[in-house]
Length: 528
Image (cartoon, rainbow, N blue to C red; front, side):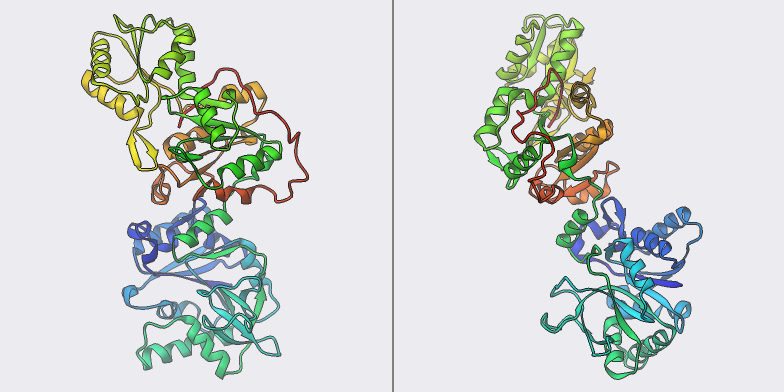
């Protein structure tokens, strides 16, 4: 069977994502929508596909070519609309006339993410022609379908009221040879004879089912996942629906970043408390990660507890852990800590000689008490040959008011003044942040997940460990950065509140002891 995918549109409601790629090439759960569709077509036996491109057509061609490399039996042809900015999808379909007019074919709009079984259900349906119809969904934006007493489509339009609609079109169709001929004749009449270039394909279909004998029925795809992606709200829903993230309550442990993930300044992110409680009720161990070296474990545990998320200091993993472990093992001599009093006290409590007379090592942390005198002493010591260590690489820290300079920015200032780079950088994304916990508790990477707001630290840490990851958009990362980054989270979610859908609703069948204590761990390192 042949297929047509209409992928010419601009996707202006998805800007700035669509400034550099067409809407059909926007990724959902790490895979472009067009790639998903082409693979689904091939899986369903639709192996000769015409893609109608327009806006940024070269990007569309490149995506088609990439899929063809993986699917050698799939033939993909691209035809290009040069007037995509002033036409709608009826004109786009008219450009596929030579490929499919008068022949059976499957049609999909290029902005619909759907699971492959939806297309398979449509192809396998008994009807000669069919609309893939979801009977459990109603949307004002979607095309609604009514049927007559024979089960044939009698009307398709956005304005159909819910009480009379048979269901919602998923924008995926299968046409018989006879319906294909009628459809292209109607399109030619509309475009060539009436000069109407701005109409929808569904308008032509509607005129046919109202005025002509036809064979267009519905194929019930209720329960199959699909999302028409018009704007960022749609894209968010598609990301969540098609994510490859395993159920979080089937994990042994989940590691949560703090700043920008669970809270901003002194405000807990909405839904954070409920998610942590839900995971703990299901017997999942919860740990807290932060690259933020400005405080110590008891401070973070106390803050979390006051915010309504009870935490034990031993469940808090900091970048300072790795710094201390390295200093204890390395015989660093006298150490100057460019950091807060809390960080200096934590280093000294580990038995490290802390001072500023003639330091052999300088540790630069996230110093919220930074003075010029500290920066001066650190610079002179490093220029005099002291070892330069950086607690973690984060350039900025998210706050309720916006981003502020973090450890990486302070380290960059010292590096510029000394013409030296740190000999070592601790914290996320180094796998050692979690390795000691996995080793101590016997967790396999597949049994844990990392949730954070930074691609270069949180998600990269998960990649280093080999576990699943969630990138939330309440802190550092944006959806545009996720789209363009080589670092790919398992799931991108607006906030931790959206992760409850990855925890089974029935909390009565708990894994482990719901009253289990907050996890405890010896040593370790982390990041924010």
